[in-house]
Image 1 (tube, rainbow, N blue to C red):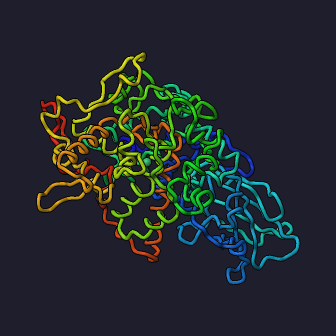
Image 2 (cartoon, rainbow, N blue to C red):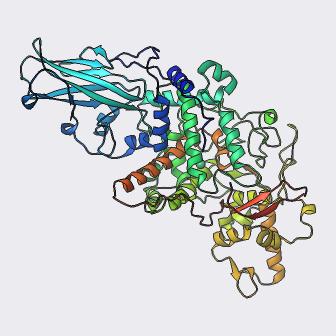
Length: 618
Ligand SMILES: [Cu+2]
C-alpha cells in the first residue's frame, strides 16, 4: 500500500502549509498564514487510515451535557494549589449538539476534540471561583479571542492537529484561575444525510469539480494534490480490469486499496475546498426506511430508487434514469462525461476509445445506471442484518471477505445494472428456468471467460458502427474442438459457480467425476444446455459503470466504501476495548464468491491463449 513516493520532510511540510492554512481565530476564518502546518499531513493520513473520523461521526455515544466539560492543566497563577479553583472546558458544534454527544469520547486518546472548519463553541466553567463578577479571558493558539457570552467564545480551526486554548477566570481585574487545554482537531466523515444542507452542497460541489475538471487544468487551479476523475478511473481500471486477475477485489487488498483510494480522492476534494471531508452512505438506513429492514429482493427497484434522497437530482441523480441509453441527463451530474479518445491516456479503454472496461462495449459517453440485471431483479437490498453478520466475524480475514462480496458488492450491482445482451434471455430470466439465479453473477462469469481467453472483445469500433456490430464474443476458432462442458468445467472454474448459484439444478456426480444437469433427460439434452449456457455467458452486453471496473465514474462509488471502512474500524475498536475479540492476522477468507476467481492468467506467453493457474492475485 503506497499513497505516493516517500518525500523529504520539508516537502511534506511545505505542501501541508500550502493546503492547510493555519492560525485558528475565534469566529473568524483565518487567512493563509502558513506558520505551523508541520505535521498536519501526517496527522490526516493517520486519521483517515485509522478511520477515527468515521467513528467520531458514527458511534452512538450517550454522554449528556453535564459531563461535557473536563478539567484542564493548572497554570501557575500564584494561588496555593490545594485550594485553587478548577477550570473546565467544553467544546460543541452544531453536529455534536444535534447528536447529543461529546466531541471526544472515552475511547479516543484526546480529552478535547474539535472538527476542522466547524464553528466550535467553547464553554468555560469554574469550580471554586467566586460566583459574582466572574469573567473569562480566552486565548486560542496564543491569539486573544473576544468572548461571545460571559462563559463562551468561538473558534474555527482550519488545520488538523493539536491546538491550545488558554482560559483565564477573572473576578473584576484579578486572576482567580488560568488553565491550558489541548484541543485535537480532526476532519470528520459523516453520513450523507446527517450533513447540513450547506456542508452537503460544499461536498457535492467539490466532487463535481473533480468530475468536470481534468487533472492537468485542476492542478493549476488547486495545486498538486488535485486529481481529476479520469486519474481515479484509470487507476481503478488498471487494478480491476487487468487481464491476469482483479488486483483490487479478489483478496485481502479490497479494503486497503479502497481506503487509500478514497483518501486520495478526499485530498483532491480538499485541494478544491479545504472545508470538506469525505462523506459515507449508510444504505442500511434505506433498507430500514424503505424496505422495512427486510432486505427484500424487489425493494431496490420498487422503493429505494424512487424514495431515497440520495437519488434526487441535486444529490447523486436518478438511480435508474429512464433515458434510451440509461445515462444521466438531468441534475448535478448531467455534464459529467466518460473520457473520450482515451487511448493516449490509458492502456485500457473500451473499443470506442472510452475510458471504461474493455468488455463494456457501450458507446455512450455518459455514465449509466439501470435498476435491473438482464431484465431481472435479483440482488436484495443490503440492510442491518447483513452488516451485523460482518460484525460477528472473529477474524480480520473473515471481515475482509464480508465487507467485500456480502455488503458492498450488491450495491455495485444494484446501482449499475446490466442490459443489452442479444442472447436468449429466457434461459436466465424465465421465472421457471433453473438458471434464473445465473443472471446476477452473469457478468462476473463472462469476465472469467474473458480472462481465460475464451471471450474476446473488439479492439476498436468506429463511432458509426451500431452496437450490434460492436460486441464481445467467444470465437469458435479459439475453442479448438473443446465442448462447452470442457470449457466451463475443466478449462475454467465457471461451472463450480454455476453449480453453486443454481442450487441443485447442476450437481457434481462423484462416480463419473462430472457435473450433471439434474433435469436432463438425455446426454444430448445436457450437451445442448451446456452449449446454451456457454453462449449466454459469451456476451457481457452493457453494464452501468458501478457494475464495472470503471466504477469510480459513478459519484456514488465514493460514498460506498467509507461505510465499510467505518464498520471495520468500529469492529477493531470493539476488540481493542476487549468487548469482542478480533484476530487481526492479515488475510482473506476465500469463500467461493462468484467474483473470486482464485486463479491468475499469464498472458505473457507467445500463445493465443493465456496460461491460467491457481493462485492469489498479487
Ligand atoms: Cu466497491
